[in-house]
Image 1 (cartoon, rainbow, N blue to C red):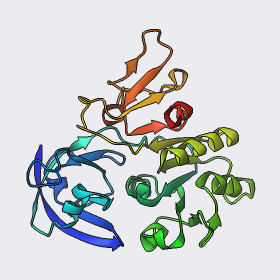
Image 2: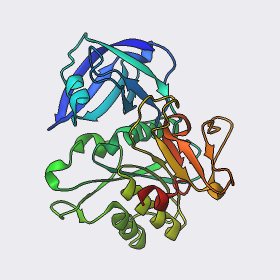
Image 3: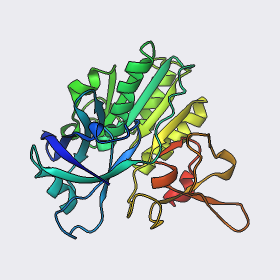
Image 4: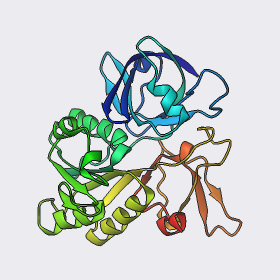
Length: 285
């Protein structure tokens, strides 16, 4: 548990805020994909903390978060001002694997606020693997919901998409990905990194399988505690596709008695998973 200080809290789009804190000076530095659990209230209401992925790690300034106001917790957070204290836990969870240096091109795919953890990853790639090419697919329901244009375009070429076709490609992220691969805009050898609604991620997983692409996803789900006690963030995985390594061993797997199915706690084993690791059909059923 850490008490940090708000450095800045600004509205970057209607209902969307960027919160800068001095967390980088308070302890372990986070990795892209990890998150912090923030107490969003001055009393027991709201009772539960809220999870926020790391959006940026700014040298000498701290950790930044990007969030959308959707309820009483984030409404309270939007009212914080420079100098206000925050009660946080973290960094929690695992981070993106940066072992994509054997691939020449990384494709970051987001919808709405899903861009938050991917921006940190894009900046990390820019710092550690400057020769890697970056492309971004960013979408929303309609043109008015698109935001963060200048920031994203600073990372690399952005392909915009909207459900209604009011800007960019009309359709889903997976359809745009397929179009860009078929037309040769994206190379056949690239790595996908995505964050957004589960239905979008499931579609991307199927499209990646079609084109023989590998990738990772940052899952968005409700969390009660953030450290594996409440079991509220369980997600089904495909046993034959489990990915574990020394750094991220998945300590919270929950197996069925017959060993044929397995659930993972996103707060402990995630929120980053291999694109083909999640049982999308079971999770979305």
